[in-house]
Image (cartoon, rainbow, N blue to C red):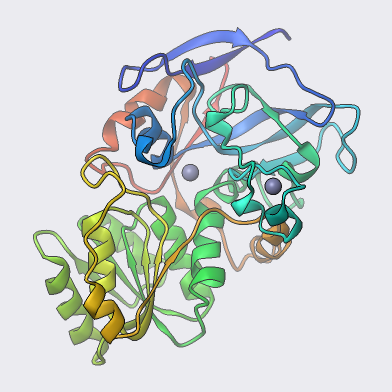
Length: 360
Ligand SMILES: [Zn+2]
Ligand SMILES: [Zn+2]
């Protein structure tokens, strides 16, 4: 097969186009993966919206977005070891080089040569095939019980949540935790925090999101519609009967969500920020630094999840303790991706929307 169907961005904020483009060529260290499941994520929308120039992100146009990839190895470069054609794999969005100081430390998510699939030509997931560079590291084989749809979640939102809650926040059983923004990452954070024994309070402005959080085991929910960050903080304190929570996870990003989460923390609390900002903040926030000092708060960033930590995560999914597929809202075709993007600015999407039809 020489050509494939893909969704291409020709210009920032202009409707994307479904068209036939060449199947990517692969090099000796690469794999060609047939995509069977591709999640539609707010990160893709941000890039289509022209965000993140302030951290030197520039979309090479035209480009295929999509970075939550589950699929099957179709072809392998001559130097790739440990993978075979036909293996089902997940592609972590933090594709890494394998040889820089961070990769050698097992922190592939901090790789000096970090490659986002949707910023790497030929690797964007809204297509029938993707080229996965350095395939030995960047194709993670799936155990039999982990589905291709699970793999999409494990390529971004779910592994992001796992690292934020378990590794960066170091959540311990019995601790209280606020999760702000119950979208794809937020729901995964609630589920993982509950599985680790956390007492979760979920914050969102949408009733459907709060109901979803309750179903996943949140003990309390707060509708933050019309409330200032401080007012939400007061509610959290009233609910916990303490001076706030031990851990706050901001799963959205931007001043409102970050400051709301910060205001919910008790003394010594840890704020983990997963979401990046958008056009309103352009990467800059006003932080209440005196409060951070006086309460000995920690502010921690979290990005992706190292390939080296996948075995633990896959074991938890295999055992049924974590179930990424639980968050699927709907399955769509390549031609529907733009319509899903159009619902994102007003947060009308609920949970996980997957492209699973590629060749209509
Ligand atoms: Zn994503
Ligand atoms: Zn590296």
